Image 1: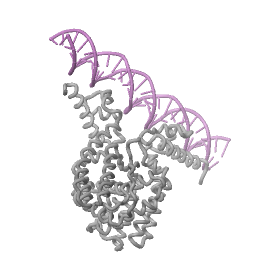
Image 2: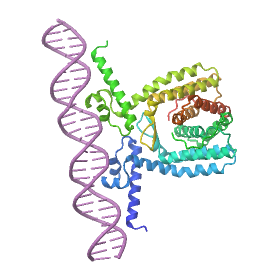
Image 3: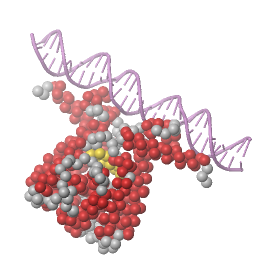
Image 4: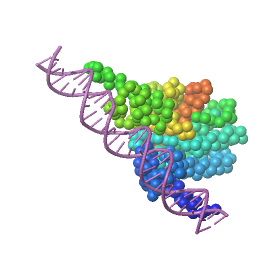
Amino acid sequence: MSGKREQTKQANKQAILDAARDVFVKLGYGATTVRDIIRATDLASGTFYNYFKSKEEVFQAISDENAIRVRPRLRAERIRARTVEEFISGTFRTFFDYAADDRRTFAVIRRNADTMRVRMDTPEIIAGFDELRADLLTAIDAGLFPPVDADYLMASMVGVAFEIAEYMLARDPIDPSAAADFATALFLGGLKALPTATISREPANA
Amino acid sequence: MSGKREQTKQANKQAILDAARDVFVKLGYGATTVRDIIRATDLASGTFYNYFKSKEEVFQAISDENAIRVRPRLRAERIRARTVEEFISGTFRTFFDYAADDRRTFAVIRRNADTMRVRMDTPEIIAGFDELRADLLTAIDAGLFPPVDADYLMASMVGVAFEIAEYMLARDPIDPSAAADFATALFLGGLKALPTATISREPANA
DNA sequence: GCAGTTACGTGACACTCCGTCAACTTCTTC
DNA sequence: GAAGAAGTTGACGGAGTGTCACGTAACTGC
């Protein structure tokens, strides 16, 4: 079931994604055009549109690839967790390790014009947020966490993770452990002080 | 010193900014073109370029307007603070109140294509981060805060503020106080647990 | 107030990018 | 190996970009 047709299709798609990654890093997301991307392959302009609708969709595909790579790891950490400490430190440690590891792609997500930082959350990434939220609710039900506002707690963890990652990557040497320790301590200490609330089970839509 | 020349110049610039705000909200940042913006005014296309280099620069101007409006308030809160609690709760309360108040413009900053969230940090906004960092260092020197990693603490506060704001604005009713209470409790509790560190005085560049 | 000067608004222009599509090439199927 | 399906190609109409020579209206000094 993998004839030559299927093979070139895979190859072309990958070629576009690879080229796009390079070009995004080189020119920044805003400045790159669909033409820039295909010019970096040996394909014709029309071919691009057999695979993606726009440069935005390529960007999404790249981001989502990453999200799909980390999400299961994060999930596994949280499911394995038997204590609050494990839940939180496992999550942050995994995230920061990944960011340090794959910081080239992480840079693709972030980098733009010199004076502006951009962060985009693609559907897969947002799904990751919902997953964290769901796991927090489960942990609350299990009595692992106090009954705090799960949306806000999820939002806080997400915000801290992405923002600290940024500064972590700017340091030399890059130290994911230190970053994870910081974030973990913040939330472990904070959790004890957080107001408890009635819990909503509806999905969070921001 | 305010002849007719100067007046129309002010008026034109404001007309472009106002139109841009509307169009960004209506079409999303990515989809709007410079032409869309000037079409929403009664100016000619060439005139746009007498005032701004590109739609990106207009966007920056809009974001910066906001930053310039909140920054002094945040600063005042932090300088007035005599306790950690005042420092932190004052900062968050002011920020969330502003976000709730001016959520139309806040939406301009955030909204993009349906499935993607975007956050851009313009120079003025980033300057606001540096200001927070500086105030944290001052507070540490004054013995108000324990000697924690100021970059990471700043990053955490920024991340939590923006991320919670997003979810706060999605709720009905919008309750900035509750959001501020949550964030404040998180950091007050967290601060006690945070690892203490030697402090770097170099500016943070992420 | 009037000529000279400067500032700025205007829209046409040359250029680039976009997304599409008819023609062509290559693989697959029978 | 012929017929059909699948996929690639680049040229094309449409739209956006930034610029510039021109015209007009506001300032300046007399």
